[in-house]
Length: 191
Image (spheres, rainbow, N blue to C red):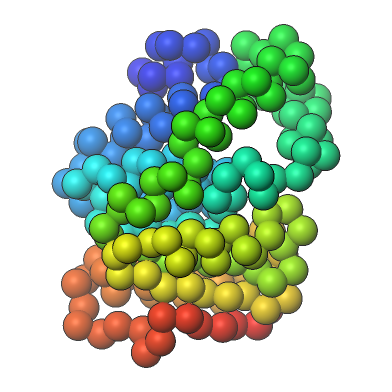
């Protein structure tokens, strides 16, 4: 049973995502994490565990400051409409918990503590999370770091085969402990 089921009846909290991801990662000796958008928040925090060998962050907010309030409200309303948001009475309660979790687990606070290979991926035309979010984290990252800039790419980069192929290639490079490394730390692809 996942911790979000034990502790919160499936209540939406980033903290629950983190507890669930820790529970999953601790079952393996070696894991390569990929976090998309808000999923990059728990992925960044959990990457401190020894089982995590590399981290890919795709269009991830570095902090609450880079997230647009109107889009947070829209995400809340969509979740309510789909009945996928449990244990939250209203938007104010949702935002209170969301702010609290983002303040505690903002990737910008944890990225400097991760001494593992990190690939940052972001689209130049992302209208949800600005590309500056990934650039800020890239500058603060201390381990082996790479930046994949996706020209003309929006927020949903998982829909582009060329992006996902590049991410898979990068993960395989570390999974196989290859001596091959990307030629440059900053790569550019067009979609």
